Image 1 (cartoon, protein in one colour):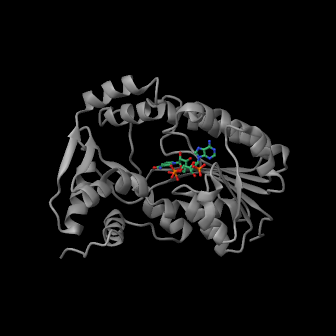
Image 2 (cartoon, rainbow, N blue to C red):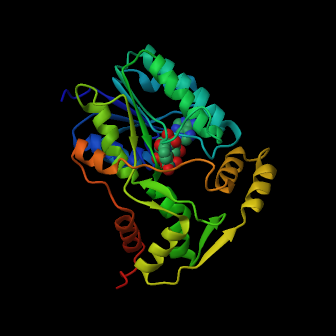
Image 3 (cartoon, rainbow, N blue to C red):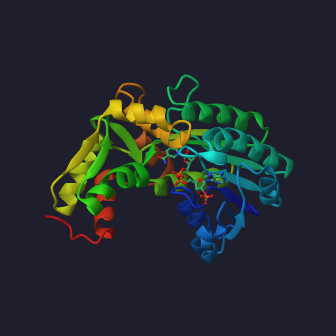
Length: 308
Ligand SMILES: NC(=O)c1ccc[n+]([C@@H]2O[C@H](COP(=O)([O-])OP(=O)(O)OC[C@H]3O[C@@H](n4cnc5c(N)ncnc54)[C@H](OP(=O)(O)O)[C@@H]3O)[C@@H](O)[C@H]2O)c1
């Protein structure tokens, strides 16, 4: 493994960015961590990363951040954005500006985080944008790798479901909570990001990434309840209400509108399945976190004694 001179991480403060920076620093790699609010990257600076201010909607800041960088990990997004940080500005125009800045600075490898199932015909614009930027990455001329992970446990299992049950005694789900989806820990995805950044030769140009289980929102609430020894109390916002809120929210908060619409779609609107976890483990020699294990960890972190 040739150690790259400097890896620039865009989205360093996110669920994927933090463990990726941490793994890179453990391997002694110099890291520049970009954030709109570098004070939020103080923990990354404590690991020896250089925290720099920057914004995907500010091309000059991207040019500055790319100076001297030899590799880039792009793991930021504006799914929930509004105002100057709409998904169009961040996920589309911002990433195109980043590609130009990286190429002009002589970056020799670009790793882009897309999403499992992103394609041009996807019913949600965010996933169509991911597919468009995948093409722009390939057309940039830089050697590149594209990560296509399923839903992150840190957000979709914990923040948007189990956390509510642990902290408020009730999980709040949109729709019936019956869609079975694949989940992967962002901390596991970070290992694939690091392999894409550091392995010689480039280990893959595009990789679908997911975990072992397919679970519904109701399944997850039950897992938390079981692990914490509490009742699985769940509230449901009807899908029709979420759809109406999505229309009302669009002018003020397009990111919230997008998420409301996404969650109000019928279970069969798009597939969130993945059946390659065992093959990934065998190919890359790692063990992917299981959802029940992740849930037990979150329950312990919340200071609850494990239920027996
Ligand atoms: N979450 C999932 O379930 C999931 C699933 C599949 C793929 N992905 C993809 O994986 C990547 C990482 O997602 P995540 O869940 O780890 O992200 P996250 O936790 O939601 O964090 C978002 C990150 O994006 C950065 N960011 C947002 N707007 C920005 C802007 N205008 N300029 C620069 N940075 C900006 C934020 O940095 P600051 O706030 O510090 O500026 C933050 O570090 C994204 O590309 C995402 O689309 C995520």
